[in-house]
Length: 141
Image (cartoon, rainbow, N blue to C red):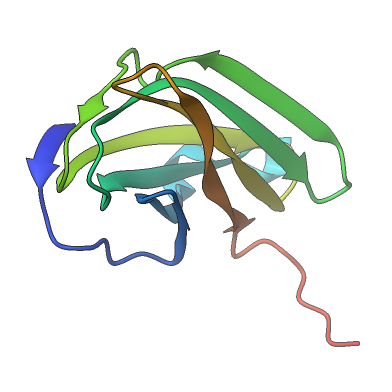
């Protein structure tokens, strides 16, 4: 975790808002999941990169998590993983978090509240990404 200077992220899911790129790679955690108890856990790896020319700070997060049955949870709070990183031009911040569900699949999406040096705030999109497990029934319509 922390600030690094890196090339654009290689990710399954990516969104760019006002020069802030958010890239997410979800990973099903077999060893922490127990399908017999309807417990499914995913890690999601996030890379936030400032591709713009203005320094920004991530001040808050707003997640929407939807399980297979459409049940929705909302998670809001300051920063991410206890930090409110400042990203100068070309900087990236990487972190990993986790999401448990009681269904074998789901969807996550959201926004990060970013603040510029002059105090302006905007929402940087977190791309919608799917939480897939090998326990999900696949059906072709």
